[in-house]
Length: 365
Image (cartoon, rainbow, N blue to C red):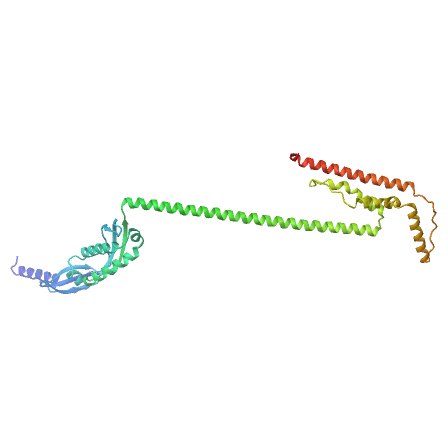
């Protein structure tokens, strides 16, 4: 080999080494801390950077993206002397690479220990129930303490979350029993409320049913009474329009007497006070006025004479009256027959009423 070529090769290797030692390419979201002769010089930004070979060197390479750190469960004692294991998750980001490299030796270990001590201080002032229900408050207090402490380390704590709180097994069993009892209580309350609402709705339905039935009965009674009143009015008008005599009316009155005891609701039967008046009307209708009223023949003649005198005063001729006139035998017989029929009808009605009462009340004997 030519002796001249060897020095050229050596010089080329030295140039390549110097160029490689001078040029530094920093990736995105990375920061390099440069030391010159062991002293911090500057922080290289992403891209192409030049340093002095041999004099400058890269001390630390840091990632400035937001990172997640999950610590192991740590035992913490609550205010009511219960030991719980708390697992936390930390979200942090390096904001000052120089401080993160030179202000603290190991920032992850420092953050972990600071989190544990802060948790013990916070949880130590709470009981177990407050610890389980106050996660937001614990997170806020943790973040405030960590921000204050890690600010000088060039680290910003973005978020702190409690991942799990594990009480002892005995406490878990007691909590499960309490939860089961609360659920049973709520179920019983809901069941009772359901039954109460059902009874209320049933009562409301029964009330509405009774109201509607009463209204229907009322309307039916009103319509029935209206129909009966119209029927009576039509009968009354027909009787007066046809000018029915006393014999027909008296006969109809006596004909309805046996029907008074035919109803199932009648336990006793009352004889109307107009019965004698009806018999008298029948007797009068058939011309037996002396028998119906109990007057003597002389009184009858005197009444007839008085009628004649009144007729003479009015200027109307009075009919001649025979002094020894007698009542017609057929009228007397008819009156007697009507009285017998009325008495028989009353006896039959009483018998039917007594039979109906005995049939309906057999247990009162």
